[in-house]
Image (cartoon, rainbow, N blue to C red; front, side, top):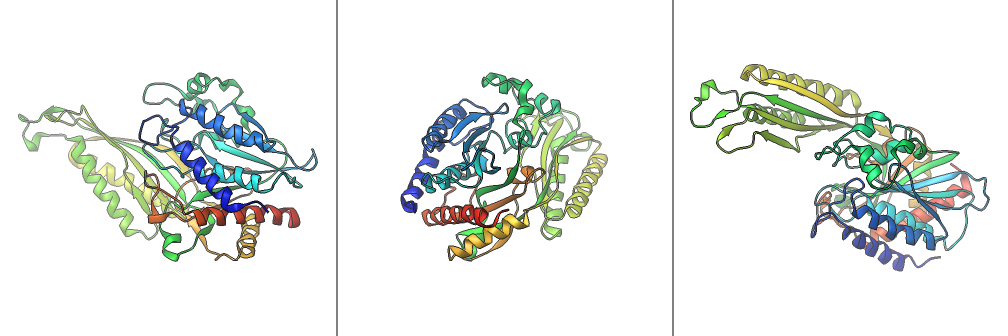
Length: 410
């Protein structure tokens, strides 16, 4: 048996090292195929190669490493998470899942299994640079189409150009799609919420990932002088947006289990002495039941239309993401529960309120997730952290899970 306490320190040190590979000094910011991603790839590549893994970067920029099976014709199991971050994010969201995956393979001590294991560090999950998430995992399920490659960031750089600038060939992006027999996918991830901490549990079994809708909503009025335009003659786009944002909050409070967030707002022309002529807002709506989510989104768009009409504004909206709720695979989940029980840890099944690459992979392969407790419930924040004993617990469960899959199959 590997020294899991020492391996735990290796995991924590690796996450700290990766956190320093950032676009912004003193902050953890790493977006799709930004320069620091080269450092991340080199760091993890070296570790994986020391374990006897073959390592490559696929055409969408995912880092992939293969740990061979005990026979060349064996199927594969996937482990992984994402390597990008939100602006000024934390050291563990995403990166911990990749590092834990490699560490679990190190814990095997060179032992080969009846299936190969592929570790994937997804190039993009957060949707920060291009406004659309899951670029890396979409490519694995064959959804990296021309429309996705044509998306542009705030500087006018397309996904295709970003891929090319990284030294890859976007024309070959379809080659990133999964090939051959794949048994399933497991993603280790911090909970990003307070539930496990409230229960004093180290780990949680994810039963389902809630559905989510992301929209861009724009109010258009008329920019004018802030000092000379009477209040009753104004068409203030930002005031309309502000009224609607309050309605968004009230909608979420009124529907159990619904969360709705306006996380971005831009007022144009953006001068202190000019009435805003345009206001652009993001909208993020999530619920475990798709019918509740879609009904709420439709209602919020209707409320935006009503606000715009009453204030003499124009309204436009665009759906950026419409992702249905995704149940985790019951067999993989059962095997994971056995592993938790064998490690004499408490079993707790729960939904995930955040989106994950697992929900995309589930389109093609059985998928499961294991949560680690988030102290303080913090995530997407510089103070995000994990407890060493929880990392050790995850390593134990991950190792036992691999053994159970070999004993009982998927």
